[in-house]
Length: 151
Image 1 (tube, rainbow, N blue to C red):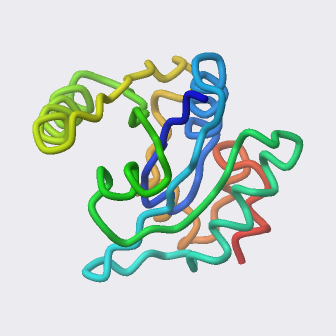
Image 2: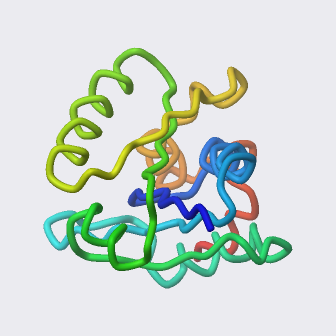
């Protein structure tokens, strides 16, 4: 079985993230979405709410699992038996950042990173902007499926 890990803070999990999972399902038997917990960062949405939200989006897919983790991404990959890390790329800036991390992850673990290009329709979606909109009372439903599940 080919299993990959799609890691992130997912604060919140956007329609762009959803699309990346669907792309990954075309290559992998199982996609594990890893909600990373960084004790040095305070997310806007609670981890348990993020996990429940993501699980609701993929409830029809037995081959999509959602877990939280608080360790190096490659260590979590080893723990769950993932052979690849999946990342989405919106632009050249994302590529430069993700390429460096991918090289480091491979150097320390042998785990490869697979990059998927974000669909043009989702390329402007940015979780930081979505959080700002949410905090200011704007409707985020064009960018986040079922955002009411996050609160």
